[in-house]
Amino acid sequence: MFEFRPGLAEAPFLIGPKALYHGELDKQIAMVAARLLAGNMGQQRVLFMVRDDLALIPLLLGCLRAGAIPLLLDPGTAAGQVQYLLEHAQVAGVIADADRIAQWQQAGMTLPAQQIGVAGAQAKGKLLGKLLGRRAPVDLDNWPGLLSAPAPAALPPARQEGPAYVVFTSGSTARPKGVEMHWPALLAHLSTIGNHYGLDHNSRIMNLMPLSHGDGLVQGVLLAYQVGCALVRPAPFSIIGIEALLIAVYREQVSHLIAAPTALALIQQYGSHLAENFSNGRFQFAISCSAPLNPAIWTGFASTFKVKLINTYGLSETGACGLYAGPDAASHKVGSVGMPRDMQAKILLEDGSAAGDDESGELCLQGANLMHGYLDNPEATAAVLRDGWLHTGDQARRDSDGVYWITGRLKDLIICGGYNLSPEAINSVLLQHPAVLEAATVALPDATWGEIPVACVVLRPAMEADSAQLLAHCGSQLGAHELPKRIVFSSQLPRTPSGKVITAQLQKSLSVMPAGAAASRDWRAQVFSLAAELFHVAPDALQDSSGPANTPGWDSLAHINFVIGLEARFGIRLSPTDVVHMESLGATVQMIERLAR
Image 1 (cartoon, rainbow, N blue to C red):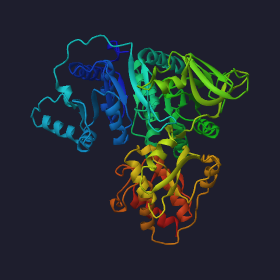
Image 2 (cartoon, rainbow, N blue to C red; image 1 turned 30 degrees about the vertical axis):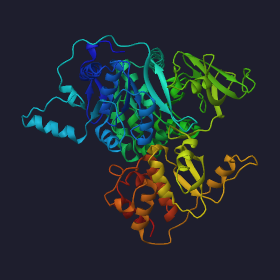
Image 3 (cartoon, rainbow, N blue to C red; image 1 turned 135 degrees about the vertical axis):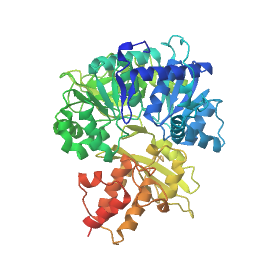
Image 4 (tube, rainbow, N blue to C red; image 1 turned 60 degrees about the vertical axis):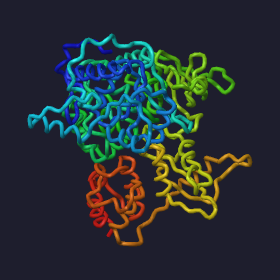
């Protein structure tokens, strides 16, 4: 993977707010690897949590080049989950944003001695110092400070055996499981994906997934580096940035777009007026990943933008993909997950026998790209890896043409915008609140996000708590993307005689969402109140200038929920143009005043 490629030195690797070229990246990778090897971090586990792409990419690849094993965490991971890993996962080092390291230290968490802190505003001060002629001392425990060290001597050969990386998946359990992928599986999978997509040095992949996510990691950074092509990342995905994203598709001559169904739906809804941007002379097809692709989104996106959209099926346990619906005609059936590539698939009935055509059973996969197992969890590994086959927990059928179709799930799991969320994990955190007696979280269907988690809570007698308090409590232990999108209070939960919550009945009762025009004409107060509730911030922390760029919790999912809440509260209908231009609360209030009179 890390062979010398002099012909690529001047070719761009990362195309974004700032370009990063292959030659420059290779030098940075070598510096990071040398720093880690000097700290005896080869074959050691490193907790890895970095926000900025421009820092994440060389640090991650440098970690892999050194033979260290990054344990990748989403930047929104709660401190409680980080502490659990530090205490249980034999972590020997940390590579993380400096402000997060400082927060962990202030919270009394014990961190390994080996640390690389990624500077934010500090880096600007160092640059100013250089411009003024001052030479800052070399700081090998800081990014980008470690780049000031002398050029390293020759590095040992790169590893091609043993653990490569670990990503975490919620699955159906309260404690996230670490998926341990070994080098042979990773390299085999990258070869399969590159060949199937027809990638070469001239390809330009726009991947909209988080780089700590399996699909962002494997089908983004690692795939582009292995192929020697460019990775296009104009900015973190957001609704108000969709126009800029589509302009980049044309300007940067993107050849492949990789995104979750949620992003594809939002691009179609708010970017259809820029459909011609896909006619850039290089574009080949779009790829949906990480969550079920609704046939309406599939056909709608393909029709709107006049491009081929292929669907993939996979899990963190398969690297990224396993089955592909397209781009070949035989597997490209709308609504399906296509056919396996470099894998074997079978469907088992409840008695363990093989299913026939169009019989539904559990989908099982076997191939060179399977995970080694769950990190330090042999029991969980044995439960899903049996006789060399991965039991996915998904129900599927195979038609007479050999094309596979997902028909349901055996395990309790919510897939919201491409993230796997565990209802048990949400319930477990809610039940730790002193006022909560019972809690049950279920998935509600959503046209944009696929599913959203909604929690129903029963409070203890004579005790009180509101949704804002419970969400703040959840936020101390769950990542922002794991929080329930609504919390509903009830006097009891529907249960069977044996005491099990009747999920279907609870889903039906929670699916009714009250709507109606607001009784008061105090537009500003109501907009701010709704924003505070949905973004999980104190009302007095919001100002007219508050927007997605400067308000924690105001991400794309919260933005859509904000739109839904405004429409329900004020009895209005917002156009795509209105939604895209909700750049601040002040602008939103002015819009409501205009539409709701």
